[in-house]
Length: 320
Ligand code: CUA
Picture 1: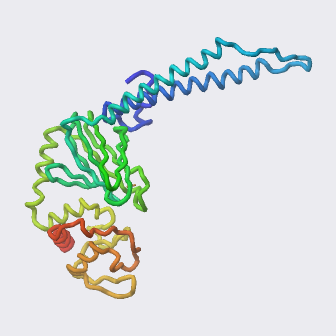
Picture 2: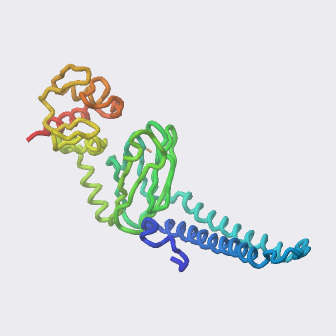
Picture 3: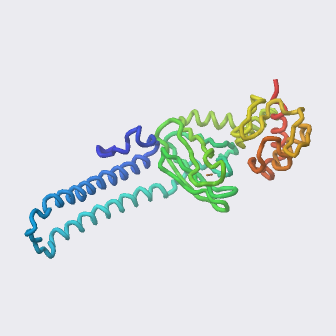
């Protein structure tokens, strides 16, 4: 934290959640202030000269000045030193940012339309949520399942493309407890703007307890597993599960099982296990009246039979 670091003000920039975030802000603060001073000298000097050397009478003659070696040397050399300094400074921070730490906590991150899915090495999966212990090196191994996404944590000042067909990396060491935004910063389709997640920095003890709790997933009853999957696959971002009358971008699932669905083509279909299964795997097969096709992504190949069963049982349980 240096005195000229105006970019550090809370109302101005997101919280600095890592050491690198502070370093990036210091560099940007320097650029901002040196540019402002440079601009003031240039524009101020120009305005002063316009006033001072304005022709005052018709017989005024312009003095003949060919050049000034010292002046020209200084206005080239001083900026050169500043620019090289900024280059070296930036290179050092960028090098820190890109040199992956050894023995880091590694988490796989999958970008997909339109959610971030995480997988820990213990097998724990989350959606739009990363939980990490404070003051620990964390390495993210990113990829995408469909199109290019970009993983961005403003408070950490780090950003990396998630590209289909290859892995990219990102690392951080959070030094502040709290919740931070995760954004997708690559336009990836109609719901790009909803591709938002939370990065939670907790104490080591809280992290261990959380991981342990999450790893009990396989032992849960089927409908409870379905509830977790429903969150995990981000179904809840479109489907309401508590209000049957909700008219969001997707039909409400509350009290749906056993009812009859009106379809867009005028026909009717009973909501049974097979209808739910088909709607998860092939959402465009039957479009509910009043809703648009091609909104829901297909989950074909992304769910095991057990997972599908768990989701169906969860939807069946949504009634009073
Ligand atoms: Cu994913 Cu934008």
